[in-house]
Length: 253
Image (cartoon, rainbow, N blue to C red; front, side, top):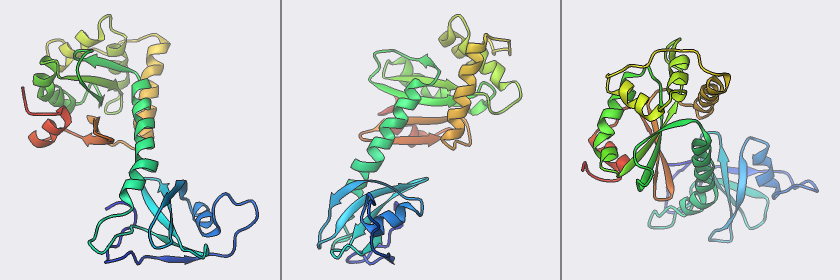
């Protein structure tokens, strides 16, 4: 479940009694009070029973807010009908998760990565890769059937987070004459990359990739992102076969 859900035949959740609105508030008083407690409001949506819905987010998640008809109280959580259907999820997907996922995808695309696979591949994945990460090499091996079949293109966002020489090795891969060939030779063990000084611009690219890694709260490499319909999926570590096929978009070629 997302947010702060409590399922019943109808939604009965934490009720917040808030003082009247102050002139100039952007949202109704109870909703405005929640913004002061750390929630970000993304928009309104229609809700049954005379309620007005508001799609909100907080660090690490999202939640729906329902304003009562008198405008003086707010219910925070998941609204369900008599059959237990979630009446909040669609609005949260449209107003919170979808825009956030699109913005994150753009950030990944704007990072500094090494292409691995056909430019015409119908499926693109971004994966954070540290040159000293044995699991990154394992993931590289796992993905060969889909990449070599032209079905998937991996974009390796090179980071240096595991060992003291990881940043220099990542920079050496990004700065190689042929980064794709260098990454392949490193990953299959044919020619492991050596740390080597690179132009400041290349070193800055690794630094910015590391910043993005931290900004996203990632803890391990590889961590891979892919699109599943409208959702953006985060896949940490080396996946099992089922998770791998889901990420690759289908069974092993």
